[in-house]
Image: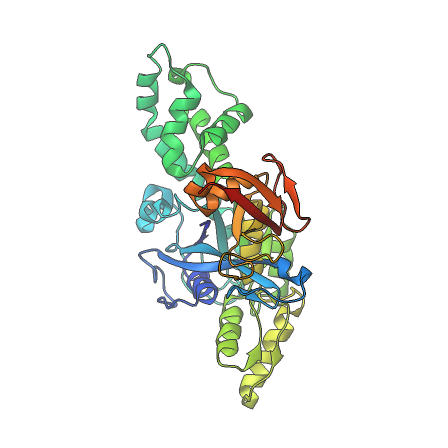
Length: 392
């Protein structure tokens, strides 16, 4: 399962984002380091279900009238402060939690109501632009320190006649989630000496920054847009990097209201309808939220998750079935499962994602939408429905 981590300063709204996206109870309070141990839960990326191409909707609990929700792990990491890579605020412990994440959502307080340490201040007193590169910089320097601490081992290995720097660095960085291909790509993109003994701190830092960029891409969630000064949000959206306006508090309120039958709302909808009995104060609050999010087509929480999965990580959703005509499994359940695979993945990759035994016994595959057999090298597309034929 893909893992998406929430990172940022204390009090930026990470835990509220996490609670809204996972419906899990966590500590939420207006003081630094409310979260000490990372919270792990299941959230979802939203896509369009292929059942909309049929005359009935599918049977999955994760499909709501053609809105398909695909599970991903969501990790809520404790707040980071400047100097985290040097251990400030238990920073190394918190940065370590990001090791297994596939992508990072940097939750920024767009209202400017928390200072650089995450302490509450008046709205507008802090410039949120100062927080944009903060998580990225701390992660880069943290990884650079790891590379530096392990460089002596690389130099020792370089004395071997069969030494290969790609292999040595891949071995070092595997724990950070880097693959051999990613390390090799980083080495191709930077300039460095042939001998590890000649590498400087600048070379190691350049490597760390490039590897982090490839293995831990970052999107910014400009949070608290419902109370943020308009000029703050406008400046954030003008940045040359992905920024999604969000209100985690608004998303949490809507999900609670939907659970109570007060509103008709699915995560990721651009708006909502009030369908239950509400007090005048509740109606005023809901209408205010509708107005605050209208410009951004919703609360942004689901949009941030979607961007992390489908844009940053470039995934496609594939649906394995046993009956190519009915799109069902052995029990007759229509489109029971959905898998997020790297773009460029093949039917063989999907077979292994379903189960290693299915992959080992793979024979061929059929595109259930066209009822045609496809080659082993066929690159899966978003919403493909695939019948896998296997000996196992």
